Every structure is written in C-alpha cells, then in structure tokens.
Image (cartoon, rainbow, N blue to C red; front, side, top):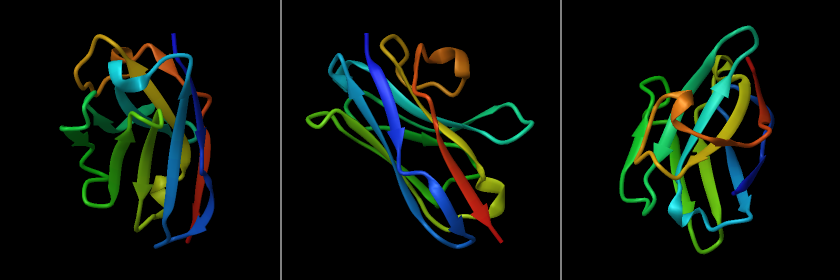
Length: 124
C-alpha cells in the first residue's frame, strides 16, 4: 500500500499562486492513477484534477481549468498541483488520492488511498 502526505498549502491573497505537493511512500506511484480533490467548509468533496500513471493524460474540473496544473514525477514519487490565479472560492482542504485500478477518475469512490490534506486559504 502507499502512504500520501500533502504539503504546500497556506494563506495567500486573491490572484496569488501556490504549489501543492503530494509525497508518496511505501510503494512506487507509477502503478497508481493520481488525483487532487478539495473540500471547502460545509461542502462535499470536489474533484480538482487527475493524471494517468504515465502522466500522459490529465483531466480538470471546469472550475480550475486553465488555472491549475497537475503533474507527476514517478522517479521522485511525487505529484504536484500548481495553482494560479487563486480566488476565495478556492479556499479548501486539498487532498491527494491514489488508486491502482482506475485509469483516471473524477469520483471520490474511484480512489482508495488518501492523504490527510493541506489547507489553502485565499483572502480577497
């Protein structure tokens, strides 16, 4: 099994940028499809982005398309999420997720392994 630890969150002003990282241990992430989800206060989990095992295909939620970029480095066992042009609606806890069976999914149920999350707070 794999363990996931997110980092890189923080408090930024609207228009700012952050890079979130997900460090994996226990197993190489090359066998896992990876994704980022987020949960804002009082709201359900929301799909943000996903990437296939090789990194050759990505998928984004409409709300973040053009502002967020997911990438992976299988040699370093990390997945990153570059988030630009932040707005207050992006405030949430961001979670990294992994699954060995799905190619690239948008549902929370598609992913078996989850990190503990990193808080992103955007002030106006």
